[in-house]
Image (cartoon, rainbow, N blue to C red; front, side, top):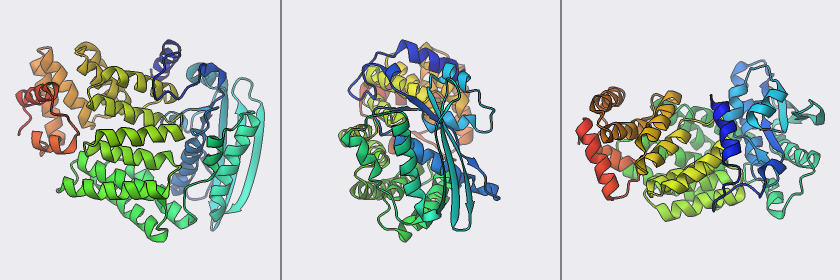
Length: 422
């Protein structure tokens, strides 16, 4: 279903542009790459996080090149373990090229193999094998990105060339802790969030200049607030801002650090600062789907739904295997536009991707109340309070950056009527 939707978005919204557009005049003119999850060839299956981290960082690097369109990892990681029919990927995902590879880690050595393939005919355009010490991982990633640009005859701009001035760490041990933390943070539970924080703290103890680790701490702290993991949310937000600012100070050429800063400002209710930071992340990485999704969320909170729809539709082009927050953004926008049937469709789709996601359920409850489906609204509220028994209107207002507007006040009243306690 996701692939079908992606194809529809591709053709219908190809020409739509906005202030934050990642596209040139013709999206079809750009090489489009799917970076498949690198296979873990190590003897230890637990090393898969390392192979995934390398894959994700290559995707991150390639999103900075305006001359290349890169599918987001959320899409390509869903292809793990599948037998790949490249021509089918051309049809389903509208790609032109595939990067595949493998990683073997043994002691303080690694072997990385990478191959760039034309998805239309299976022809290998570039291939390399690297037998290197682990500390050379960053040079290997830069070399792969550079060779892809050369193989595709992409003319790099001065901005593109800055992508190779990697704002990262010189400590492999710190980077390894960061990768472990990233995998845990993605699981979004109280326990894994705390474990990720501890790993990130360990990373900056090993390298106090590791920009992305500071940004990751900021994100984890904000998620501890939105996920109701913290008893003192205001203190967590203050700490998050400190770490996010430190991340940008140390990593001014990283879209990740600016994303973390924008995410932090947004959930502190600092909308102008959030927009400035997220816009900078998109300037650095024009193909950054999660940057567009975060900007869309910000626009929804500002009650600018049409801008949010434009942004999230572009993000879906780059990330056809999108996570729950993409349809949530669409549902939120259509809720603001008072198109409740369409909002319910997208919010239900978001919950199908993650039944534990609270924001789409809150919006869905309000939609049901608006159309008079009181029983459905109360059932959804019962489900949410079963999962989160301590959740209240008060905590929602502390955790979500909601403007004091008539629309927000009505939303809160509808949730109260459906059974959300104060």
